Image (cartoon, rainbow, N blue to C red; front, side, top):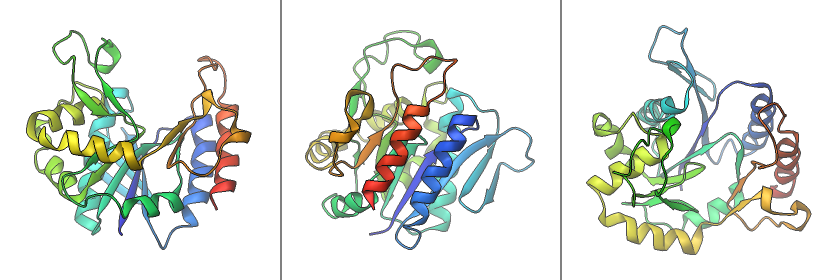
Amino acid sequence: MKVCILIIYSDNEDYKKMLQIQKEYLDKFNNEIIFYFCQMNSEQTNDLEVADNFLYVKGKECLLNILKKTVVSMKYIIQNHDIDFLIRTNISTLVNINKLKEILEHLPKTEFYGSSIYLNLQWMSHEHGIFDNSLFGTVYAQGTNIILSKDIVYDICRNCDKLRYDLIDDLAIGVYINTSKPYILESSMKISSEFLKRIDTQFSDISDLSDNYIFYRNRHLRYQDNETRNKDIENMTYFTSIFL
């Protein structure tokens, strides 16, 4: 099973620490998986520049540019790698690789748009491009873990001009799937509910957690804008130790 993990990243001091944890962990599976961190860079000349496991996309880092760097990175991946699945996640969400490899054997290799959690849009958020209720009721895979079969990755890349770049990335992908391939939603959601498990660490005592989940989201609700994410970083260090 050939899988690529694409991790959304942007520079700040806390994310740099998370990046180091992620890279040291994923490097241990270098012969088993492909992984890339994708980041915007407004100063580069080319639309895409590649350095080791980093994909740099020309442009400014902002919420509504996450979709652009995702799509540009996906195009590079499918042009340069033969994969069965692409997993789009973010820098603070850890993927339990050993458990993932077991689960992927049970997932369909075509027409799959999976996640451990699907959202049903029922709120407005100007920073995410949601200014009215016209998209309310859209069901979409939450952006901390989106699993796409190869054919869906190809389809999104071929039709990238049809994506809503004025929306936050996970919702925009969901809108596209709802519009172009609504028939895959029900089956993907059913399979995901059976096999894909995620834990949000802010709701848990990590000392009681096992390695039975696929995705470990590290985002404590207690931290404020002027605080660091030291607790998340501490948790990520712990989880990578129990995954191996």
